[in-house]
Image (cartoon, rainbow, N blue to C red; front, top):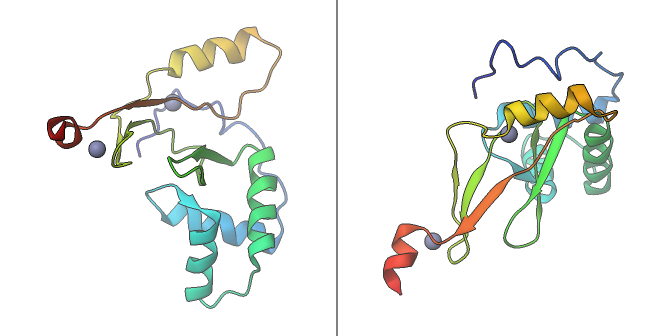
Amino acid sequence: MSVDSDDCLHKSRQMPRLTRQQRTVLEVLQQLAQPISAQSLYKTLRQDHRSIGLATVYRSLEVLKLQGLVQSRINRQGESLYSLVQQDQHYLTCLKCGQSTPLDSCPVKHLERQLQQSASFTIYYHSLEFFGLCQPCALLD
Ligand SMILES: [Zn+2]
Ligand SMILES: [Zn+2]
């Protein structure tokens, strides 16, 4: 994922102190290209022989979210998928098969910057997703 050099909204903030578990969760997210559910994250950690409970995974994700390091989006099954805030990624999601296709770029980067500068609100991340039918599903009708 490319990060524009002028896109330093998030980089300017101080890295908060994290617990070992929170750092572990963050490390796994850093290695992934795709957003992941807390359950899958937990399984990945288990396969890696890292002892961390599911409840701790959830708690760590919440803490990381409040610190502006992690973002979440809800998939079609109503499950939260987590990724790093730097991975500013948007999707076209098919309502039929659930396939999500990532967009090449973020269409609201300028808007976020404007809001950040004008409103008395610190923006950590935004979400934007488009829903409809993918071509194979549309052709099935
Ligand atoms: Zn589809
Ligand atoms: Zn974006």
